[in-house]
Length: 139
Image 1 (cartoon, rainbow, N blue to C red):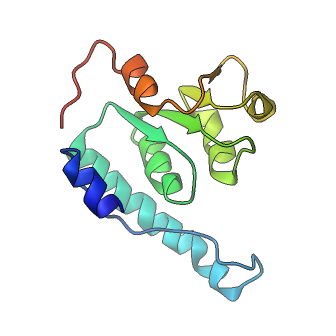
Image 2 (image 1 turned 120 degrees about the vertical axis):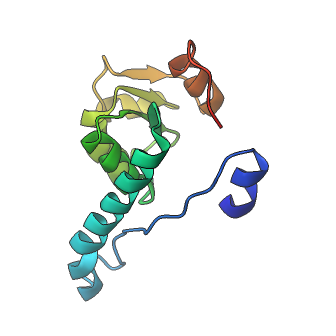
């Protein structure tokens, strides 16, 4: 899906290696996870250094983890959008590093610091405009 949607919106899609837990959790494949994660964080850091973004938006799922940790290491601002009523592992792990956390449901407040959190529903465009208000978005 991303291969079609992202370029049609005028953005360049840059594929990077993924890192995710195998199911079931006790699978021997998970012994490789730390190495896959490190490889993915490194690849994402290289992409971020080339693109020089002002912000990284985390929407959860295993794909967000490496890019957001690379952003944290690179000192790039990072915000989280939690669109579910139950917060996943990725958003809980990245929340301490987020500049701001946008949540869709009141039930999520218990997982995040209230001073960082703002309930806004699932409004990705509003998040971007709030954060990038005074700066034009380079495509």
